[in-house]
Length: 409
Ligand SMILES: *Cc1c(COP(=O)(O)O)cnc(C)c1O
Image 1 (cartoon, rainbow, N blue to C red):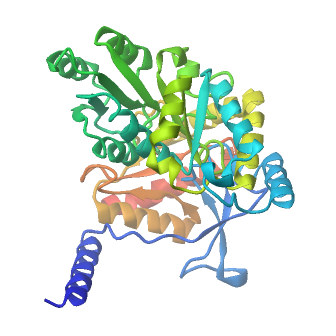
Image 2: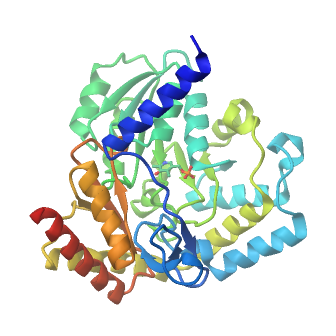
């Protein structure tokens, strides 16, 4: 066998399958413009204007509060570059821990009302490293995982020896059924999210914590799509619902609502210290760059104090949903700032997104299998405080036109 040729043939065949099924991923080149969020420059094959780029409105950014280009955040990042340079220069253990890292971990712990917090290279790494470490801590551990949990949580669970039970999404009857059927002596962990990013729905935290208490389980909550956005200080759904004290581990990202980069967990001091001491995904990778850490710290301090930003996010999300409903456009029943519009079929979904961009200068991400099940493809709209009434009206007009044509075809 010619190994190299066989491998290349396999790659080509696989790419062909992806293209045939409309699942081949093209990365659209979008340039953020500081100070003008959510306006971006699109550098596409059909791009127009100076340098071949065209200005467009982005409706699918995970920078949910526009903090990625907030002046206080930019100033903190620039100041840290000038003072400390661009990179950390080592793992946390090998000269990579600065006072900024410690200050950010203190800030995160205080934000979530937990004794300790620990930074990771991303939210993905935080879930992968923390879950795989915790689920290997006690012999015979079993984990109960919501069916729509993020790939990073699934990755962490799979890397552990724990037996995995999957409960139907947000179906607490099913969760209890599985908990009741499990070995009462097995140490149990319930792993779930607060805001689910592909559905826009929200988990009933207290009801899940009630079951955790009844069956003596630890709770692990991914608040990635909620941190910055919900609760009096923006710490997430657990803060909003007064449930943070009932959650053992809160996991979050610094890359979405916070607008920067990095991930973390928060929880009991020795539990966090244990993960710090054993998790390969933390130990063997370089610490976050000081400018990133300084920017995240400035962003969180701003977010905690700015409740008006969250109120504006909520009112913009409500305005978006009302406008879609008034125009008779379909949407999933969202209870958050994320509003999915169903467009079944991978090809159809991609084609609608393509036309929105090319003809109306609006960017919406098509979500296909394997991110969501086949047949439930959708456009994922995210309202932010900066999407004004004119942008909403333009989006609804364009969507109405493109979806009507798609239906007629
Ligand atoms: C995006 C995402 C992550 C990963 O966070 P990153 O910081 O982008 O790596 C984890 N969990 C969920 C639910 C996510 O959507």
